[in-house]
Length: 290
Image (cartoon, rainbow, N blue to C red; front, side):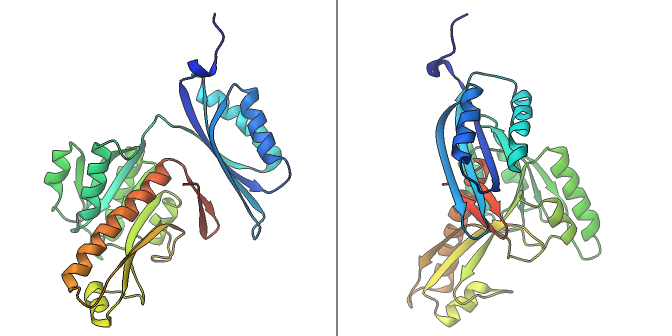
C-alpha cells in the first residue's frame, strides 16, 4: 500500500478549543495533530490577559479516517488541559433553520448566498409567524412552516418551533428579522447556536419606527449588530457590527434602505464565520478568528 503523503490527504477538519492559558499549548496541539497524521493548513490563537483563557482554531487535512475515533483521542488529550473543544468536518455544511417575519431582506440575501455557494450552510427549513415568504421558500425547495404567535399561544408556538429545529438536526438558528421575542427557556435551549440581527443607531432608538426616530434626530451613522441570542434582549455576545454614513439630505426611506443593506451584510458575515467555526465564546464576548 502506498504511503499517505500531503498530496493524497483529502479530508479537512476544523478543531476549536479554549482552556486556561499555560505554556506550550500551541506545541502540544500541533504535536497531537502531527502524531495522528494531520497537516495544519491554517491556525490562529489568542491569549486573553483578562480572563486568562487561551483560544485556538486549527484547520488541518489528513487521510480519510473515523471522526469518532479521532474525537475519542482528542478527548483523552484535552482532559489534562481542561479544554473545551470541538472537532468539525469542514466538508459538512451546517444545518440551519431560519426564522423570519415580514421583512425579507436578510432572508433573501442568505438564500442567494447559499445558492451561490458563498455560505457553508444547508437551510433545512424556514419558520415564520406570517405567510409572506412561503412562495420564496418553495422557489428554493425549502420547507416553510407557518407558526402564528400570540400572547396566548406563545408557549405552544415555541414548542413547535423547537420541535422543528430538533427534527431537522439544526446546528444553527438564524433570526433574520424575526420580530418576536424568544422566551428565556428557548434562549437557553439555543444558547450559542442562535444568531440575531438588529439595527444599531447612535443614539439608540428602540420600539416602533426606529428609522423615523433616527431621521428626526439627524443621525450621522446607521448600522447593524449580529449577536448570539440570550435571555437579555439584544444584549448577547456580539459577533459582527458595521456602520454606514448618513447626512442631512437622507430621507427616512434612504436610511431604511441603507440599514437593510447593512443588516444583510453583517448577518451574512456572522453566519459565515459561525458556520466555519471561527467564533468562540469568551464569557459575554466573542473571539472571532476571521
